[in-house]
Image 1: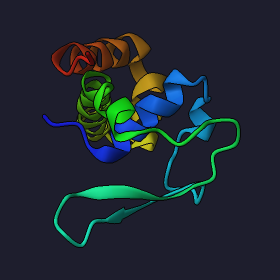
Image 2: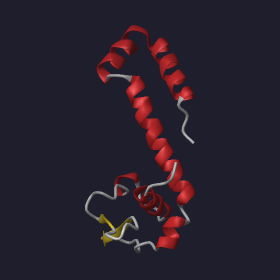
Image 3: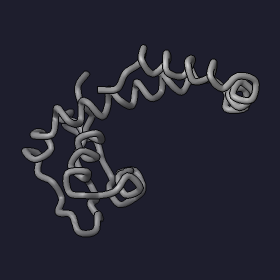
Length: 114
């Protein structure tokens, strides 16, 4: 999997100590735009307090970390689908919490994060 530009920005912000709540770059503090020449996205707006806008080189240096972020997002989505509806999970917990724990563990084991 190739890291997305957004994942690189998130990895950069994490490396600068930003918290999970501050990481979502689509909240208006960071705006991306596609290059009209087909060179991919670039940072159009950077209003992230206390963090300088990264260079292309800084973002490219985070390729591996960003790739892991992307893979883990895919894993989380798979897990969420396999876990099922939260209401059904609560019913399952009420009926047999140990069976629920075993099912969730098997899902996590089969869909491990990096």
